[in-house]
Length: 491
Ligand code: FNR
Image 1 (spheres, rainbow, N blue to C red):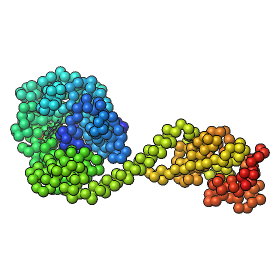
Image 2 (image 1 turned 180 degrees about the vertical axis):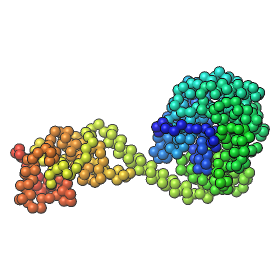
Image 3 (image 1 turned 120 degrees about the horizontal axis):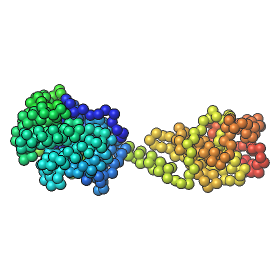
Image 4 (image 1 turned 90 degrees about the vertical axis):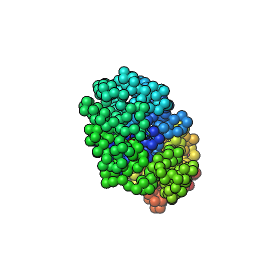
């Protein structure tokens, strides 16, 4: 993926909040389908990302960041490239920058999580631990802002006093961040504690950069219209929704929420299509089913040990089979293409040039194959042998000709076997410096001889488009200007 032309704006947006285990690709795509403007991924730790390899997944049309244990740590796709914010956990400016540079061309923005109160985050000096080290916050954010072309944001929780909170956000604003997300709770407060809309409001009024309000689910946000009510209550520029979206992602739908059953089916479709790990799919569906986990469907989901079993719980096994078949066909096709490409590219014994046979460049009934055959006879080489393969993906052909134990082929694939053979013959002739029989080469002796032969033997024209040298070498008795000592063999 290449850098974005459009810079992300954080004003008047509804946003899928970062959520560990929830904010993976299927959930993000679903949120976008229903109307979210921006989607945050789950928090990913800088060190983990640094160990990953970036892989373009041609089968799924995704970009994957894959850990050494082959686990996909982050998967994204073209659809979300202009609206996905990558949230990172970091306590080190240089490491954060290294990760952000690694990923910035695949995402629209970079966010640093400064609100996570969980021990796994704080014990490494990350998450909410950063809130007590404003200088480190400043260093991390200013390093990112200076070093990246994408907008940088951070997500904080509020501090014990309003004054401290305002001082911190003003310090953050000075680093040049594009926006600041504020979860309106203190780090020791749990989700069931009321969100402090008044503090978010005071922050919004004290900085010029967009403030993204977080923490409104349950208390405020129960349906789509509540998002705007929460925004007004906080006077924030934008609102990010976590739990309400986790429970029913269609909260982003202006026209109103959809029945959960329908939403879960759409979620499963993305999960299957993008080969989401079944444990993650199951986790997200359990969050949606919530009170219904004791129903027969909930129990089936709970005991599912594969994506297929999840699909069975939702009577979607037909969809699973169809999608799996589509992916398997695509995989087979990609594998064949890759094998051929590898064969072709990696074979050092093959001379390869980019040429294509154009019939209009040759006199009637003269072809590169004929010229090559004639040259082989003259040089007392065995006649050329052609080996042609067809690529399933686009059904094009590539031919390899062997002459005197050396292989030659064009790197341009042709529409037919016959054209591919002619291209291969051109590569060989050109490499050997032998005339190709082209009109531009002037009257070759082969042309003159061929004219003469045509008069003698009326049915000399090769079959079809006149391109089969295998046929011609049995019928023709022509020789180039130089004495041909091998004509008997060709009869
Ligand atoms: C979260 N939250 C969170 N925040 C964050 O910055 N990075 C993260 O990875 C997570 N992970 C996460 C997982 C789950 C399951 C939940 C419920 C929450 C916090 C979240 O983004 C949000 O700030 C709070 O949930 C408050 O918003 P709501 O839920 O009231 O909309």
